[in-house]
Image 1: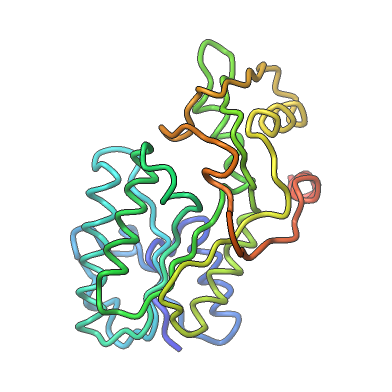
Image 2: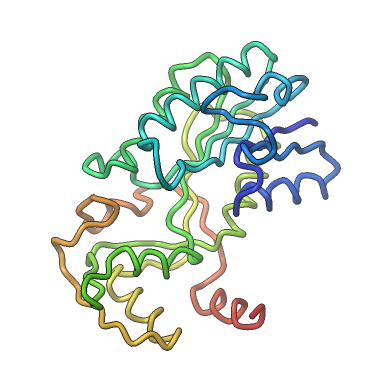
Length: 250
């Protein structure tokens, strides 16, 4: 099977490409650095030629384009190219809770991306993931002001990036579901408590203050805003296990 992974040089994409190749599939890592730009369309037709499946795990650039413009334009370009190439399955990685956090510009942009996929005539599967353990330090940094982490007290259910990769690969190799699959970690935390524990484990002295009015990615979080509320694919790696593995790796 030939699979094109958009964002194939990033954290999730590179690992997905590696897994797909290890299973004997032809996996193409497509990204601007590899000459394929879904936003401008550069290199897209050549990359999609002969593809059976397209997996979109791309992320909006850190600066420049706003996420809404990036995700909707890139997705429309991809889907048009897929129709022309006869692609049979479009898989996109999204975020759990995008339909409950419309006040977040980024999550709202991901929801708009999903709507573009759903409205197209290419068979699709949407995988929504919770926050990755690997992003906890960055989340704390974004919520730091004057040396204090002011964090939402809303619920989170973080997952190891490796388990998101496994879900991406499984769905890409399966039939289009025409709907949404949630993937999350096995444990649920209040975000402020999680960040407090993670900073303490890292020897980071920053205090964490829980504030129900503090925003996460622009959204106010409640008990169910960005965690699964129905059936979900649950990982098995706990925070303690992930932290231990990270220590061994270091």
